[in-house]
View (spheres, rainbow, N blue to C red):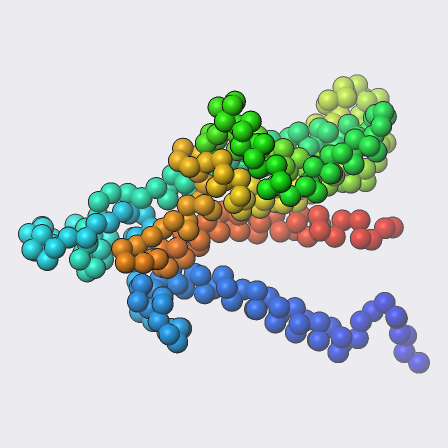
Length: 313
C-alpha cells in the first residue's frame, strides 16, 4: 500500500493550480504588453478600430514624449534645411518642427528623487523605531503602535486641505523636501509594523552575545540585527517605493512645476489635434521601468515579506 499524505497535493491538483497561475499571469500582463506596444504605434494606429495587433513600429511616441513641437505651413517646412536626425524627420512628416525638449525628463527625475528619497528615509526611521519597539520596554507600547498604524488607515485625501495650507505656510509646496517628508510620514507606519515583525523573529541571544563580546548597543544593532533583518528591510522598501512612486493625489495638489512627479504629468501630454496616445504609452512604459527593475531585483525578499508569519514552526 503506497503512502499518501493529506498535505501533499496530487499531480492533477498541481497541474490545475499551475494552469490557473499561468492564465492569471497572462491576463494581468495583457494591459502592460498593450501599453508597451502602443508606445511604438503611430497616432492613427493607436486609435484605429478594430485595434491593430500587427503594425509597423514607429518611435513617434517616444519622440513626442521628449520633445515639444509646433505646426508650420508647407512653405515654411520646404524652406527648412534637411532633418538632422530621425526625430526631426518623424516630426516633419506630421508637418511640424521640434521647438525644444519636453518636461518629461525633469518630471521623471523628480519621481526618482522623491520616490527613492522618501523610501530611504522611511526605512531608516522605521528600522530604528521598529528596533526600539521590539527590544525595549516602552510605556503604552501597544497604544503607540496602534496610533502609528491608524495613520495608515486614514485616506490621504481626508487631510489634503490641512496639509496644503500647512505646506503653503511653511514654504514646502512644490519642493522635493516637502514631498519626501510627506511620503515618509505616510509610509513610516507600514515600515514600523513590517520591520517590527521581522526584528521580533531575530533571537535576542545574538545581541546578548555581541554585547558580552564588548560591542556597544549600536554596534550590535548595526552588525548583528541589520544583516539578519535584510530580508524585511528589502521587502518593506519595495512596498514604500511602490506607494511613493505611484502616488497621485498629493502630487497633483502640492506640486505644479519644480517638484512635480511623472504621474500627474503624463496625462497632460497633449498632442496637436488630440490626445497623443503613443506618447502617453511611452511615458507610462518608461515610468514603470525603475520600480519594475527594483522589484525584480528584490523579488525573493518581496515573496518573503508577503508570506512572513504565515507558517510558524
